[in-house]
Length: 492
Image (cartoon, rainbow, N blue to C red; front, side, top):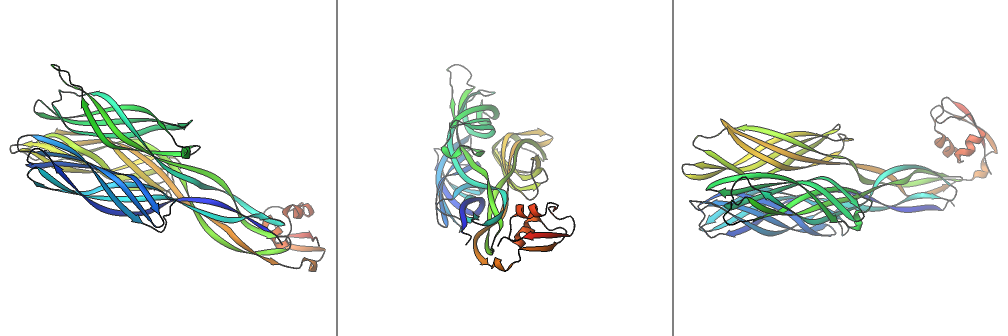
C-alpha cells in the first residue's frame, strides 16, 4: 500500500457577483416655494452588508445636493437618505468578502409648492472574494511525485476605515452664503506599518457660493496626510486603497466688519482597503508508486492574482456651442463615471463620461443645462497583459468651463487602475491504486527509449526513482537528445 497523503489548501478568487438596479424615493421640504429645479447631485455608497448562503443584503446612504430657485434667488439644500437592497448568487456564503460600486443611473424630480420628491435609480455592482478549500495529493510512502510551485491568492479581506479630512481654506471673494460644497479625494501613497495605515493624498474642494449677488465657484486643491488605525487582517498583505468622499461640510470663519473669505472644510470619507496575501503552493501534478500505478480524480481550482496597478493625471478638453442670450455663471455637481476599461499590452484604455450641471443667467432668470463630456484615455501599467481584467476609478480633481466664443470645458482627471487575472490549476483530489506483481519482472532488462522522452516519464514507466535510473545510465539526458537503450535493475 502506498498510503497516499492529502493536504488541504485555500484557493481565493475575486468574482463578479452581479449587477442590480434599485430605486429610492427622497422627499425634501424647503422654506421657500420651488419655482425651478436647477440641479440635483447624488452620491451614494454602501456602508455595510450581511452575506449568507446564496444572498447578500447591503445597506447604504445617499447624499443629495439640491439646487433650486424661488423665482428671485438661487438656493440649495442637502439631504441624506438610507437605502437597502440585496443580491443573489450561488457563489456567496457567510465567509464571502464583498465590495460594491454604486452609480446613479437616473434621477427625476417632481415639485409641489415647497416640496420636492426625488426618484433616484441606482446601479449597484457587487464583487466578492470567494474561498474554496480543496484537499489535494501531497505525497505518501513509496510514492514518487512531480510537483509544480504555483502562485495562489491565499487570503483576502475588505476593510472599511472611516476618517475625516479637515482644512482651513480661503475663497477668492467674500462669501455671502454657501450653495454647494463638493469634494474629491485621491490616494497618492499609502503604507501599512506597525498597525498604522499611513495615507497621503490630494483633496479638491469645489465651493459654490453667493458673493455680492453673483454666483462664484472656487476650486481649492490641497494635500493631506492621515494616520489610520489598521486591522490585524491587513498585516503582511498587499493593499489596494480606494477613497470615497461621503459628505462635505463647510463652516465659515466669520469676522465682523471684515471680508469673509476664510472657511473650514470637513470631508467625511472612508478608505476601502482590499488586503490580499499571495503565496506559493506546491501542487502534485503526477505520481506513481514502486509497485503500483494510480487512477487519479482531478479537480480544477481557480485563483485571482494581481497583474499591476498605476495612477495617472489626464486632461480632457471639449469645445461646446453657447446659445445666444445665455451667460455662463458656473458649473456644479461635477463627477465622472467609467463606462469601459480595457487591458492592453502594458497599458489600459479607459473610457467614460465627465458630467456637470451648467448654470446660466438669462433674461428670464437662472437656467441650468446638463453636460456630458465623453473621454478616452490610456494609462501606462507595468506588467499588464491583454488577458488581464482591469478596473478603473476616475476622480475629477479640477473642472473649468470658459466662454471663448463658444464654451470650452476642461477636466483634470485622476485615473487609478487595478488589474488582475484568473488562473486555474488542476489538482489531484483522490487516487486509486492499481497494483501489479513486480516479482514477474526480470532482474535486469534493457529498454528502448525514444528521443524527446523526459526523465520523469521514463522513471514512471519503469516504476523506479529518477536518481536510480540516472545512477545506472549516467549518460542519459533530460529530455533524451536521441534514441537510447536504457539498462534497468529491477528491485524484486
